[in-house]
Length: 299
Image 1 (cartoon, rainbow, N blue to C red):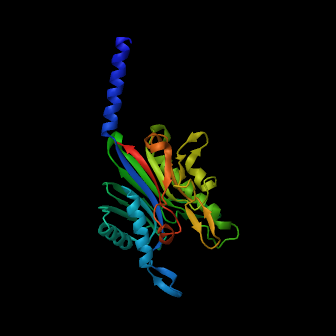
Image 2 (cartoon, rainbow, N blue to C red):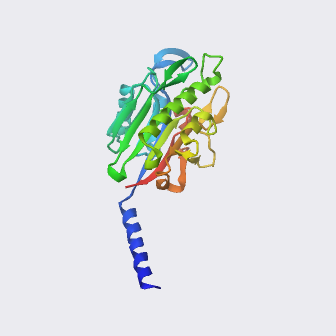
């Protein structure tokens, strides 16, 4: 073998080993907790007003979260800071400590988005992102939560979304498809302006998109024209099934929870896929959604 070639080869191996040595695996999860808040609900055959999530359902949700053991946990449908702190303290008693927490207080007064983390971060909530909706303007109902990790070249960002549900009182917007698309585009434009694609930003967009992967709200995050913004990660559970949401009223199973990665962060994702967690028998009691996660090799 040529001596110069061998020297360069050994230098490359040394660089790769050094890079791998300083990289760590960070698990990022997203979970819609299904009404972890005070609301009107049926409990044990009785209709209760402003009633909290039943304790048995909370225990089931915590079992799922503890078993998944994410380093960073993005949450949807949490009632507010007090509900988040209750969950954080209960998880700590169960052996999973998240010392860092952030809950975004957005326009929706009932259902918020939040993050729990083992890793320190800086967080910014964006609650005034608006878009044209018929003859007026609307804002993203649950806002956009931006959480930054690391510093310098090792920095990366997590965006948490919970797009508008399919419920609507407008005949001209069946299942709120136009409003959900407007929310997605407003969030997408904000992210693109702050982190231009040509700068090769490293970020994830995670959460409950309330739509399918080929629907307009999801596609808005993927690209603008020929410019790729994110890649939607494939996902599957232990049986190879890809649903994340069980619509109990119609006994329908769908995938509406996603993890999207910017091209510069995609190489850090183990196997380039995300996992739908189904390892606990309490999964169906905990929520009508299933927790999803991805493992990142970050410096």
